[in-house]
Amino acid sequence: MFLKSLEIYGFKSFADKVNLEFSDGITSLLGPNGCGKSNIVDAIKWVLGEQSTKTLRAGRMEDVIFNGTDTRKPLQVAEVTLVISNEERHLGIEEAEVEIKRRIFRNGDSEYYLNRNRVLLKNIRELFYDTGVGKSAYSILEQGKIDQILSSKPEDRRYIFEEAAGISRFKVQSLEAERK
Ligand code: ATP
Ligand code: MG
Image (cartoon, rainbow, N blue to C red; front, top):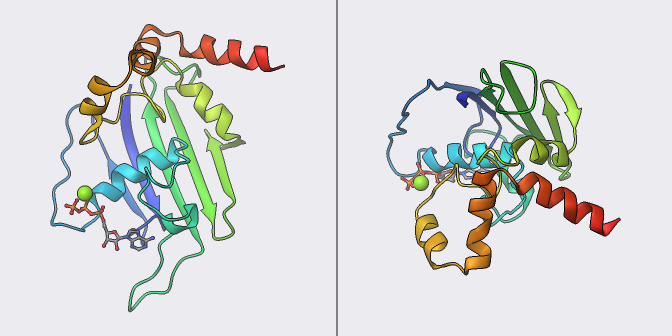
């Protein structure tokens, strides 16, 4: 399983549509300060369903929409599309590629699509349980994250092992059942 491509339109500094193609291996993003490297990582977190504006380095969620420059008007919508290779069917979908899209409008409404079908954020979350991908998993390791993992309480650190062991899904299901 690996990221195949990322299309960004109207998200943060990306006013024009850009399409990044990745291959199975290491990709480095290089560029001067402020050119948008971290915005690309933010776009990946966002399309995977990140809801924390702090994590996304935005004041309000709408702030992820391109907010204009001296020469360009702000946009009304932001869209990010991520294509993940699913050749080995690690994601529970019988397709070789999984495409996730998230769109947000200025009024704050967000839409999610999974292989072009409209879904809920919950469906995106469910897709990634036990895969190491997703909001609080370990596929995105940023500066400070290792320190945070090492210094966290054992109970908090346990989620990493639960995710790797493949039991996060069952834990969530059991919590949901208890609530009903
Ligand atoms: P560094 O090397 O310093 O970490 P970087 O390449 O990671 O830099 P980013 O943090 O990705 O840079 O990009 C910052 C730029 O994105 C800033 O110029 C900021 O103005 C711009 N930016 C952030 N949000 C928006 C937005 N909603 N609309 C337009 N531009 C935005
Ligand atoms: Mg940066």
